[in-house]
Length: 485
Ligand code: ATP
Ligand code: MG
Image (cartoon, rainbow, N blue to C red; front, side, top):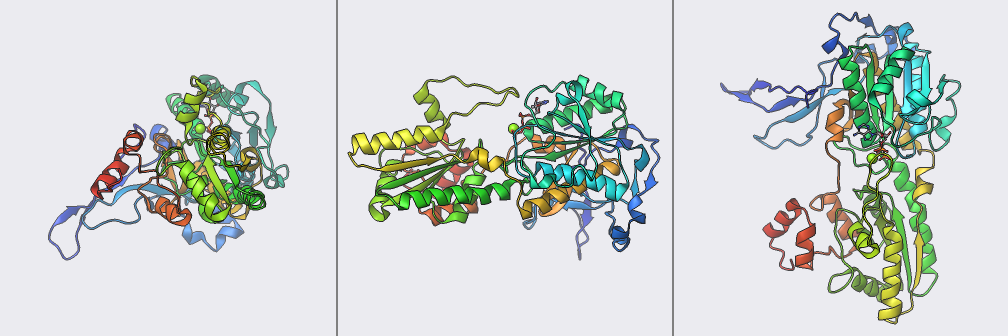
């Protein structure tokens, strides 16, 4: 929060003698000159570039901002704005003095290699930088592993491969050791690709760099396949994941359609948010029911999952359930009597809800209902994470990487990049790590999904649901006086 500065910007309303406070707020990102005020600046080398010669006039003014809210209701504040990303007329690094490094941390996601490639090519082609190090094996690679020199030639083909050529890891973030290493190696631009944990690590690195008064720009490129990063429109790899998920859903559908009473279960990524499951369901049309962490469900009784499965089998002879990995975790934990486990980065380890649900449905129909079913469980999660990014994600990764390069060259630091209402912006790191995006049950998209699958909303079991639903959803339900709850 200390990194942010907000100000109110009063304007004079048109045709009015009153000055009104329009509620404009700017959440700015830090700049190297905040703690190194005497830094010299240089004309942007893009002035000389052929590609930019024709668009010279479109250097982004440092005053340009991007609005977080796209719809502003009458008399409501204009709200938060962020600095617009893009090349600045003047930069704070002389290209010859730049020694950049790139590190990738956390889980895999389609598109990481494309971002690496485009940072390298962006720095080299646009700014003439040719000293770029790849830090191998995540944060701990700063102090325990080798580095590799990255050039446009060495990264030329990497976007066609999944994974990360720099490799990755969890845990091992030691801020002091990392910054010591940055100093020792003479690195002055650090590009950090990773999820929420990684971005928290990036914020810690930025703060230490500032404390030591180093001329080092720290840029974060947010990575999460789950699309749960706050503020930005979408995270890279998400489109690819949704597209690849179609193949698994399709396989499940083909399987269950070919047998009697076929039930297909497909587990997709989504630890805390069900965006992949929701959008993959909406895209597919073969899914009868989508279960996500944000929407509690129950199995038995009126309006429960078993009743719905039975109804679909009677109507259609088969059905497909899409399940986000974070859904129903409390049931699985109860049934397995397990205590929470943690990974090396301190994240809660999830239990396999797919296996649990498969067993529950089998037990119910085979043992209790005495109704033979053919159940197929497909878990494509690791296959999805490992593929290269698709065309639209490749374009998106390029934009992210170029925005990060322009931002670091212009002297911004402690920022992450991402599109806000489809305009790329520089966002203070703290803003994207303090909250996570989740599917809101009161949003239009979830209503569209319910309308598309015609699945139960699981709102019948009043007592159980009241405990699990969030306040906002309960308020809406109460307001609408839905009788069943
Ligand atoms: P994803 O969850 O999408 O796989 P992530 O970036 O959240 O990605 P993590 O394993 O949680 O993955 O974290 C990656 C790196 O960030 C690890 O090296 C970890 O030590 C470091 N890290 C995580 N949380 C913090 C924190 N609060 N402060 C500093 N470093 C952190
Ligand atoms: Mg994470």
